[in-house]
Structures are given as structure tokens and as C-alpha cells.
Image 1 (cartoon, rainbow, N blue to C red):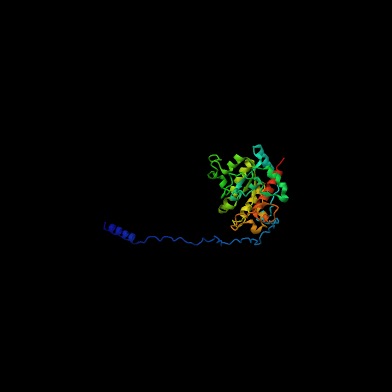
Image 2: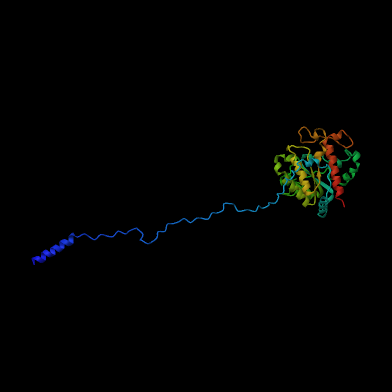
Length: 317
């Protein structure tokens, strides 16, 4: 029994003293017989660095565009004093006849230089206060429009500018209807076939509005069948001639007569202007007197008659 215990104890001690079996370390070596394949770099085919041959496109030859000629801003100065009368002018006149206008009447739109009794009025006075001299043929146009020369237009007044004729405030309270403009009133009560439009001197304070206001006047007159006769002014208070240039341009655009009064006074002393450079020099309407014709007023009345005569004759059947 004692032997068995000792033997068992020996076995136990033997078991406790023995070490654990060593773990196999995995090898990194390739097994013998397996060929090692070294990686090789694949050679990239050489790419031609030459640029592809391009076909040059032939561009169309550019056409040289020359700048438009600058408009001649002073062309109005070369316009004739008495204008040629267009077919369009006659059409407006005939339209007015159909609307009931009187072919023996004309009206005046303007400022103090139109309002004054010095403008055309002497041709209605008796006895005559004018002498026609070599212009005796103008007696026919004086006779034809008798009564319109001295008549006071309600659309002509001291201080008027182009906007004034559309202001009911300035309408004649006796002759005009409530709310009626001076221009509408003048056409209603007189029923003219022609109208002198002589504005601009008092528009120098609002030059930027002048063209628009003149367009309104022209368009309204044409709608009423009244042929507008625009007139340039002798002065240049605005400094650059812009107002006369505008009148010239509008006359061309609407194909209506332009009386270039400015051109008529250029050879007169002081170009026909008083010291204030606004009002005209005074002289009697003696067209046979060289001394009288050195003043602007007789030149104004003579050339106005000549223009009216030309318009009247050109618009007759």
C-alpha cells in the first residue's frame, strides 16, 4: 500500500516537472520547389509627343466697317429762308379742308415777338403802312389772308414757351372753354388752315423739354388738319444753336415747312438783334428802302410773307 502511494506520488511529481511542448513557429520561407517570381515593370509604349497635325481653317476676311458719318450739327444753318413745299404739306392742308378748316385763315403760336402788333399786323391796316417795292406780287397773299394778320391769337403771348400752349391756366378766360388749352382754343375759334409756330427764346430755361413739347404741338396741329410752319429764331441764347437745330430736324422728320428766319438776319448789323441779344431791331415795313431793310423787323415781315405765299400757292388745287 505504501508502495502504491510512493509510486503515485512519483508519477505526480514527474507530471508537474515536465515542460509544455514547444509551439511550432510558422516559417516565412517559400517551400522548396516553388519558383520565386520577381515582379517586372511592364514597359509603357512610348507615346508620340508630336501634336496631331491640325488643318488650319481659313477664316473669312473681315469686312472693315467704317463708322457712320457724324451728322452735320450745323446743317440747319444752310437751310433756305423760304423752303420747298412737300406733297405731305398739301396732304395736311387737304385733310384740314375735309375737317372744316378755312383756307383763307392762318394762326400764330409764339411769344412776345409773335404777340406784338409789329409782326404781320401792318398788312391788315388801313391806310397801308407798308411798301412792297419789287415784291408787289405779294399783294395777292396779303389779300387772300386778310383779317388774319392783325388778329390777336390766343396761342401767342408774352413769355410763352413751347409748354405754355398746353396749359389751360394761360387760356383766354373769355374766349376759351373751361379747361381748354390755348392751342386747342385757337384752333377751335379761328379754324385756320396754316399756323406759324415761332417758339424757342423762352425755352432756354428748359432746353431738355423743348423737342418733346414741339412734337406735341406739331402732332396736334396735324391731327387738326392745320399745316405747321416752323420758324427758326434770330437769337442764340442757349449758346449752341440747339433749339434751331431741333426745329430743323423736326421739320425734316414731319416733312413740314421750315422758315429759316435765322439765315435772313445774319448779314444785318448785329445780326438783327438789340443789345439784349433777344429782341429784334425795329424798322418800318418799307421793303423798297435799303436803310429800313438793315433792321430785323421789316426782314421778318417780308420773309414771313414770302413763306406764307409759297405755302399757299403750293397747297392750292
